[in-house]
Length: 87
Image 1: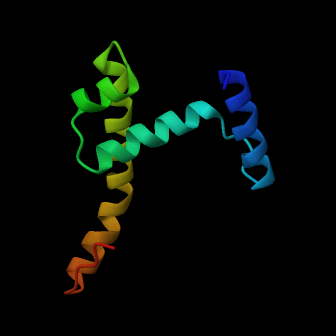
Image 2: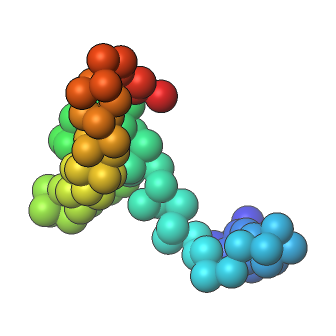
Image 3: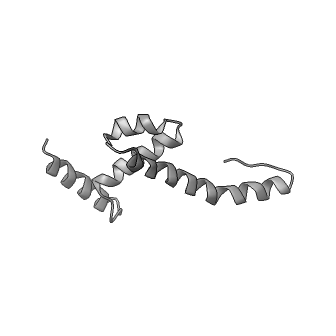
């Protein structure tokens, strides 16, 4: 299958699902983010995504850190109340 054909199929599926603004490249970002979230090293993610420069791969590390910063205040609020909810 040609890359343009795959892009067209994915774009049409996303539009049918009501997901505007989703591009094939978004899937790469999602894959990198999820790999990091599951504990993959930056070097492993670099290999999987084919990045030549580790700085490109580190974008996913920063996204994960930003995600954690959003969640931590909520978690610590539960801890101050005597319970901790990591869901």
